[in-house]
Length: 241
Image: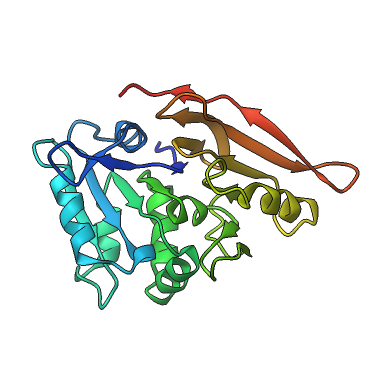
């Protein structure tokens, strides 16, 4: 029986020494969690950044010389794969890049990818991603999709019944907004990540936090009895380089 897994992160690719990008420890963790870690079929979706062609090149370049079978799926300006559902269901890992989570959700729903992602998750494909690629699996969370002032997005895919906060340590406005959204019940209990941290879920249960650097953490934010929010720090397991 397959176990549905999601790795929702504030990290992913890193600058390469001779390539633009290389897979970081969090991305490698997603591959290691998959059904075929030694020859994983890995599909990158850059919907949130407008499916820029150069990003696709960088993804393929990042995996040169590895056993990972990388592909890039686009929906803009039109799908680049004849049967996106078949392709995505044939992957071991689907990694979603950062950008506009509001735009991502709208485009995925337009193309029916919201249903495909649930189907892939239930079939055991590891769903993962960074920033917008973390928020999208949850109910919602703080986002800059609508402009420089952070706002709430509440129409996530909700595969996970929690809110989500990303870039918790590097963008100061995200923490107080997440607290406010949980306190007024706009969002349910939420999990958040500092940069370099990922949240591993099996089914809909939080399992552990993972990190690619020292001194960072994950957090659980819950509504308290007085109608405020209480935050609990979660120490992550440090991944090898």
